[in-house]
Image (tube, rainbow over all chains, first blue to last red; front, side):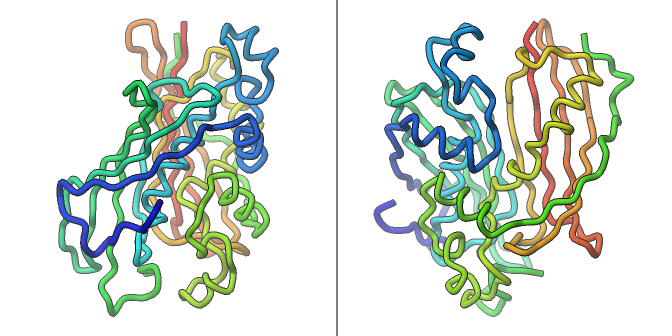
Length: 149
Length: 144
């Protein structure tokens, strides 16, 4: 992300994002190691071919992890309440993913404003590979760090 | 066909130590740039116990052979037919390096939609005092 989106300034309809990739085999290997998910369809081309795929595919959870950076990249730091993703389309090696957040609502609560977002990771041809939603808390200025209860 | 008698199936509880190295590797693999996820001094200065787990980090804790394959075996499903349909994390408190969690996974729903089977599970992660820290909701799709 060039400059972090300002959580305190986000209003319904606002969008922000970044482009990630192209996702390399090294990225897949690093994510497999970091997540513990060594499913052959992600790390073993022979296994992937036996499963009927032309090549290994990127972990769905990798694209969800990229989408989570739309939340962790906010300034000042948000307290993340919820993130959800649907894995809609396979992501091939070498894909570029446009990761975008759109603010759907902002609601005042006693703990601070809850900002709801819709999240999408989109392939260059316009296919939404992963789509989801998130809720973050914009802590009241007097609150504990990170809004910890 | 999924056997709905397995709704409510509970897998054995497990303990997870949240290791700093594991958090760093995960943040690095995703290209995270917020230093509260990578730099202990920054995290502490921001008021956290240590570096903070990223929002999808519990996938590391929940990716355990005995949970995934234990469940799949009990349900009588061929592993190669399973796709990860959706995933949701609900956070109740921040998770930091050095923390210890206890997880319990349950099958909350099993249903069939045309040819596809759906397995919905939840893992509840609690701290040693019993407070809920995070819930992991997962939907697997089973191809015919």
